[in-house]
View 1 (cartoon, rainbow, N blue to C red):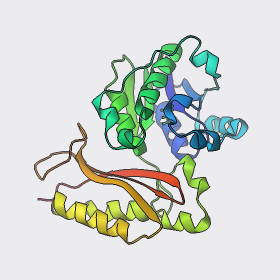
View 2: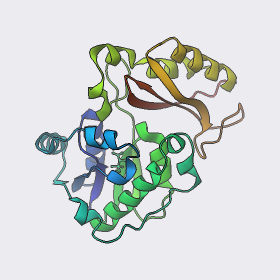
View 3: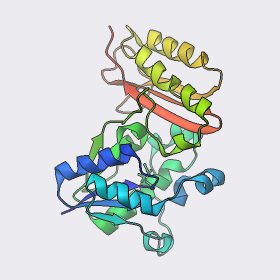
View 4: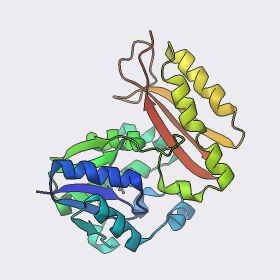
Length: 251
Ligand code: PAF
């Protein structure tokens, strides 16, 4: 049996953590590298997506991958694409800002599962909405999550971080600072206020959304919601950054 780690390449320590997690589940770990055009609503983002197959193969192998699979478009979509809907969760927050993004994600993940037939697949908590949607897919594959890996200052690792200037890179930890400042707040209202004021203190940050949600269904949380999570998305220097953190229960 095999454990699959689906990626779009541009591997970093976050992907290596997913691969190491996969190795704890099975000795056969396939890392797929496929930059999926269906999940890019923005052509420039797709074109700018960093690609370096040789380096990716090295990093994946070092982390314990037993196979690195780089399918081409025809291998994944040999016939007419059968689009799969991500459902209502695919339309809110990240899905609202990036129309069709999650339909593209579940469509390709479904194809990867059909081809590789893994017993399990590992996804990062950094893309928490993606993780939740993939967990809700009707599939025999066990979905395993792995915690977000962060830089020394808390910035969540992402293939997009390399597009920030040195100045932008310093500012980018504002998202993590907002999450940490809010996570022990005594109520949802205080947490929301702390997040908003922290983010507003960084003038280079453009907010898309910042919300405290019920992590089961992404509805706005209240103080009775048992599993609350803060989710934040925005841009610095035109680079889209997202992050999230489980919130303490406060009162
Ligand atoms: O998280 C990603 O890198 C992608 O969305 C995934 C899961 C590999 C699907 O293309």
